[in-house]
Image 1 (cartoon, helix red, strand yellow):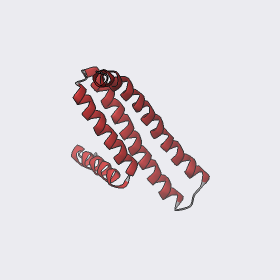
Image 2 (image 1 turned 45 degrees about the vertical axis):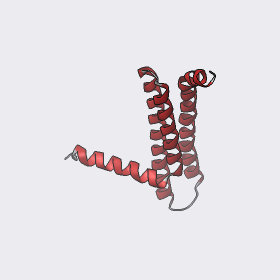
Image 3 (image 1 turned 90 degrees about the horizontal axis):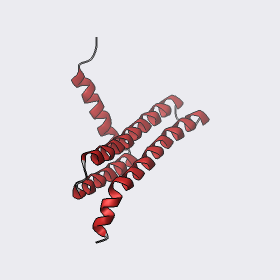
Image 4 (image 1 turned 180 degrees about the horizontal axis):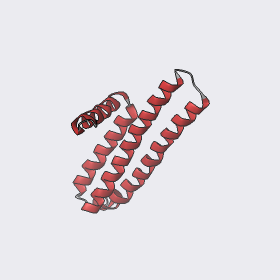
Length: 122
């Protein structure tokens, strides 16, 4: 029998909250996301620009949450030992976050850079 949706939603929220408490990099990404949202609101960007910014933010946060899940699962499976395959899995998951963060930074520069430059160059 399938679990009620609210139970699944509660578990997902608990996982996000636990990750925020335990993962410094996730908190850094949340701070950057907050800054991007504040700047975007200040610049009054359009709906398509908002979509790009919010999608970039969601991509980075999702990648960081998946990285956390991979790290925890690998640590559990490895039982405290540092196996080369465990290290490779953790490094690959971390690399995925780096790719998403770099792409998000480029999106942020493309969307927020020109209007910010116009405002500051006056």
